[in-house]
Image (cartoon, rainbow, N blue to C red; front, side):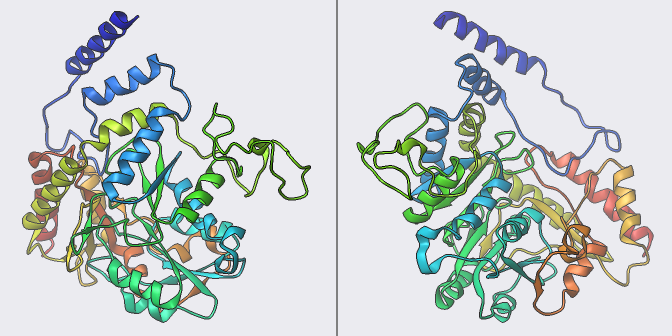
Length: 433
């Protein structure tokens, strides 16, 4: 079987090499906003895991968790089936009875931004907590520490913010604010894997951080996510909630790691009830699979290369569009080195064209655009009947809903593609000078 497997994997490599497409035709070939960059080793990793029938979470999942935790210099990483699930687990962990007086209870507030992706906010609502929305700054598209501080009220217990399109918010100062006020800080790092603030990786400042491995993100498993933390109490709660809510920490197929499987009494259960079936949290099965982790392990070796490519692509767009009229171009947060997720553009108020006209022009030239996620979540139908609080006007979030979009910088783009994006934007904007 060993020889057969080697032959199969050699054929997989040959298949990949024979199906590589190349060539770019401006206006015909799509310039995508995002996408996975997959090589022959990724394809082989997936096929090898399938040949070994590693269809549930197992050895590859554990290896990935250890490798990712080591990359961040954190103690624990727990794989999930998506970044959205990672966010749900991170927020839900803060409601655990095991945190005693520090736990969040229904009605407590979590400060976040209105101009973001809904799965940063939805776990707050799903846990009966109240999101407090603040505005962001145009250009960096992040909330300032001052805006967050002004939003803190007597029932505020946590802050949860995403690094906007990979651009870090002032996370060291935000972590200090959270510490000074006795608040939890969750970093939604899904768009910012590899970004740094003051020389330190984002995702390492807060009590917990989350990652997404959807194909649009910095590395991919197809689907997948992760919760990272240095706090072993929070790590154990996250693991329990991810694994059906069980109290036991044995791996699937493993028995009696604690040597007390039939020697404990919890809740009102009978003495000696099987610990594998004692549930200490309301949980679900939110694990990933070894098929995903096998792909992720190979992708993980390329984080730095992908980050270099994203930075190069962003810088090429920024230099090429510098001085183009009617457009507000993005800026990195001071003291940061973003591993960019996208290149944000805001059409200025005095522009002689509507944002939709520019977006339509780009799309017709096969340059893909994406809105800056929700723009302003409070204006979406899903949140009209939900309880939330707004701190200060959401002026810039409203501007983003009307006039902001982003284009791609992911590693699958070539300089020729980026130059086509630059030329398309420049031609339209200067024509309307």
